[in-house]
Image (cartoon, rainbow, N blue to C red):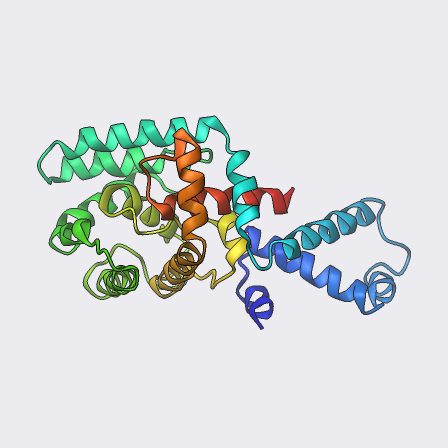
Length: 276
């Protein structure tokens, strides 16, 4: 099942892992096995902090289930609660990116773009040292002939644009070295998705653990996982397109952005609500 896949693919220390623990606790409880599990783990009695943690995990799983499947009303509610600071951060980032892109494509420009995107948002990217940022900027420069055409990958037909972007991810996997081999802990898929979205084409969705709590998908740091995520996001955008367009019209801070970005914000907020 989809939930079983999410459990198998959960990464230690991530929100995927949190949901895995919440699922396990809920399933064990539902099957009447919690007491025997605790007795096996702690024969002399569980520590006092265990019970509050179990209750927390149960509530997380309950909230997680409430968003299956995602509805238009849930999207509306999430975007009504959007932090104004998030919109301000977006505007500041777009302004900085426009400034860098007024320069000709060059290594210096790409270093600036990489550093600006890496430091954007509520949570600065951890484990992304300066030397790695410089290395990715070098790779962006070397594969610019692959990336540059993607900036114009837009189509009036929804299915055509989706297929075009999926093909673009295949090109990124086969024709660039932007993402290390599968299993490399230095993989920067989160950053690359942000770079693709803000600097290349806003049809590329952001790879975010909070958003993935809502839609699921493979959590492996690979282009294959990102391609699956792109497909999931575009399916949801197509399903809720009318709703997203209406919400965007109602809120000045959402106007002018892609529907992919609008949904991304809703998923991010809902994911935070699930975690609590």
